[in-house]
Amino acid sequence: MGWIIALLVGGIAGWLASLVMNRDASMGILWNIVVGCVGSLIGNALSGPLFGIRGSVQAFSLTGLIIAFVGAVILLGIVNFFRRGSVR
Image (cartoon, rainbow, N blue to C red; front, side, top):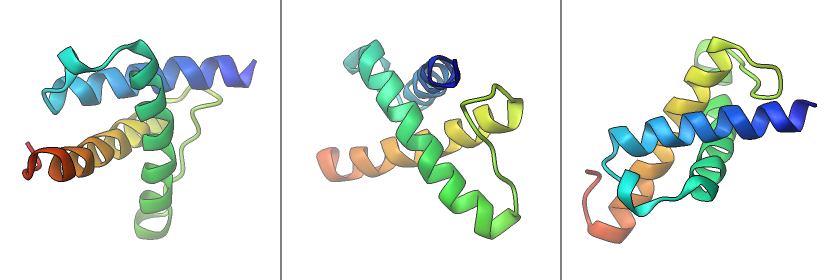
């Protein structure tokens, strides 16, 4: 059951991040899920050592969603930088 919740939370986090980074039109639902799940890994890798906060997308929590969202925004910023030459 945890992987289904992870896909849902990852999809929501990826979709919200794509809206913030103006990439919504170029991404489908599959890429939103991938970006959200990878963003969760990035967010946990950064928030754990820096702030001592961990959030899991396998058991829905607001903390996990926020960490996945921030990680997804960072991931999309990196992708935008290498594809377009600017973060935005």
